[in-house]
Amino acid sequence: MFYEPRKKNHGLPKNPFNSLVIPRPIGWISSVDKNGVFNLAPYSFFNAVSYSPPTVMFASGVGSADDKTKDSARNVEATGEFVCNLATWDTREQMNQTSATLSPETDEIALTGLTPIASTLVAAPRIAEAPVHLECKYLKTVDMPGWNENDIYKVLFGEVVGIHVNDEFITDEGLIDVARMLPIGRLGYNDYTRVYGESTFTLDRPD
Image 1: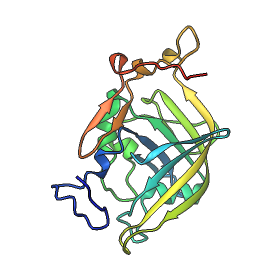
Image 2: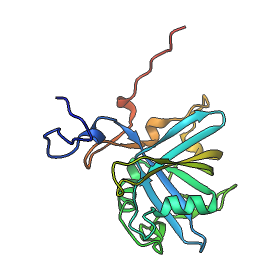
Image 3: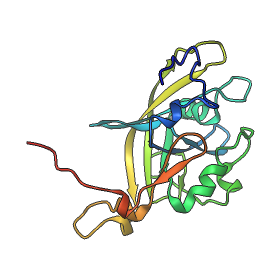
Image 4: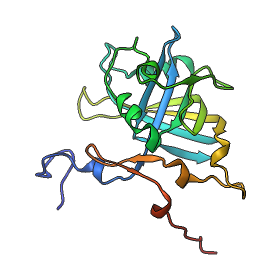
């Protein structure tokens, strides 16, 4: 099969693009607005983009508010801060609940029964139930060109200025036990995957 995305001539029931770039890590982004209302939302267009300094990005589509901006993006651009929380198998249901389209006044952390805890270097809260938190300072936004006026996408970059890791997931050798965390990733459609012991393998880099 070959198709041109702009022509949408794939002939399938749904656009397969999201099922081809897989698996995608989930950026479970927590932020706070100027009125102190917490926001929490998952973004599967998320990843680390550089190592020194450590930098992450998440891409936000069109929002339902009058300014057509999602709450996370608005909050991050206004406050200059956010936290990325690691979504795991244990928090999969709450992660999914926080993907709902809700009013800016809604606190998704409270709504889903999760526990907000204070960050060390930023005002945005962390999620206690997540084993890893990346405290981030906003760097910049890159507006992506769309095909029409409703295709509004922006990529937000943040420098990771503080990292929290639950000590129980650090091995005696000082490595991160990713398999024990059971992180989840996004596939296409409504599908997800998880990392566990039998799903991982090791390859040594060539000299």
